[in-house]
Amino acid sequence: MGMTMTEKILAAHAGREKVAPGQNIWVNVDVLMTHDVCGPGTFGIFKKQFGPDAKVWDPEKIVLIPDHYIFTTDPHANRNLEILRTIAKEQNLKYFYDAHSPAYKGVCHVALPQEGHTRPGEILIGTDSHTCTAGAFGEFATGVGNTDAALVLGTGKIWLKVPPTMRFIFDGPPPPYLMAKDLILHIIGEIGVDGATYRAMEFAGDGVLALKVEERMTLCNMAIEAGGKNGIIEPDDITLAYVKKRTDKPFTVVKNDEDASYYSERVFKSADIQPTVARPHSPENRATARELAGTKITHAYIGSCTGGKITDMQAAARVLLGRKTAVPTFVVPATMEVARAMEHEKVDGATLKQVFESAGAQIAPPSCAACLGGPPDTFGRLNGREICISTTNRNFPGRMGSKESQVFLASPYTVAASAVRGRITDPREFL
Amino acid sequence: MEEIIEGKAFILGNNIDTDQIIPAQHLVYNLDDPEERKNFGRFCLSSVPPELSGLPNGHIPFIEDGECASEYQIIIAGGNFGCGSSREHAPVALNMAGVKAVVAESYARIFFRNAVNGGYLVPFETPQRLIDHIATGDRLRIDLQAGTLTNLDNGQTFSLSPLGDVAEILKAGDVFAYARTAGLY
Image (cartoon, rainbow over all chains, first blue to last red; front, side):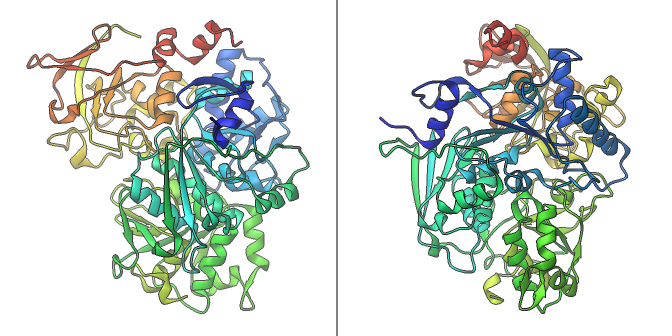
């Protein structure tokens, strides 16, 4: 019997001809990514285990991207940025995108592909659960803790239990009012927040292949919200065009064997799916925007690795063009590349930045910002009993700051439409 | 890994995510500094909604104000414990608070890996949902060899699922010790 993409990538990196779900194997890692929240601790463990003068296994395979707590006066957070600088110098790391420098990029999961670090067929390990985003490029990508990452720093290896693959097939291109966020919230509502625990989630079908790279990233990004080990999409011409524009490094495209076996296969008709929202306090609390229509909100937030990409900004701007927001609306482009694009990409003659500003939204420089709350002075943070609709990925108690706040998750279309009304709104009213 | 773990129970519900275990604003402390590290204990489980903190009645703080260690050493939880972010600060926080074991119906895998690979605590699974049978404050005893959890206050005994492959890592102490014995480096 054949293997799935995930199994084939893992087998190739374990030096085996074949692996099967459930097997524990040691694999070689192609790229290790860490950031300001987990980088200092990871290198702390590395030094404790491998010695104070130890060198990392390959300084060209580590990507250091500060992105979480950048624009804050918190002294501990700023100290952590300093620690990263020391590490990068000491270890002679080739890829260090330092905060407050021209090299700064912003949110790691969006910066990694933009800088050419995500390539089909590879294994990417990151100290962040949303590392699974990179599965959109046909690679095995997963998040780990500091200890696992420290072992990778020293040896280039990690142990993994081979996950079985759940396939989610979208039949037909999504209608114009839907975004990848609706599709993935629909799936999570269907299978629950532990519905894919320790399994690969593969997204397939012409509905998925009709999506741009950034939208595919949204699907894989939220695999972790269903407990998935990784999200993955077979590379096609769209993937390869994106990757080859950003890197000269060779890579191997891996696809499912025709006789691969799957844990499960679900087929959705894209046209049947509605603009979808996850109610507080869990991504699995699915409702349609129509069902929640009229629910009062006090804040709207557009940003993060999930909902701060250029396609997300374009979508939100399409709705906000010529309209005013009724509640405080916070916009945080994921990366510098997105922020720059917002200054020249236009809808109806106005740049995205102009559209947001005319609508009364506030724009901050790229970072993770309030997606995960962060220090009290974080832009857009919920500090009291706010009710926020957000393009981010998690609405756990206290996730965006105060544990008294409430977060609804939705697509950039739905968030923008709701910002205009001050109430949850189905974006079809504006599109 | 200790053969016998004893302590008081703290009961939590389903889907306890790592933001509830250690809210993101506290991730700034240095894990390598013994004094700063205590803060992870101080703020452990501080984002659990009060009504769900210490079931069945709730409204029981896991950590008393200003303290860094908890009077509860064993967490009993429902399904999908540790979901969400990959922050290793979560098992570290529980460890710093003095937690020796978590007994849950199931785990999110990154938390499970972190707990095991870092040797911070023992994550047991149970075939039965224990949160309906044990109350916060009950005195418990876990017997690793026998694979049982006993409520010392009423004598009730429950079985624990075998630890499986990860027992080797827990026995070694952490993944580094395990990797060395496996000849990895």
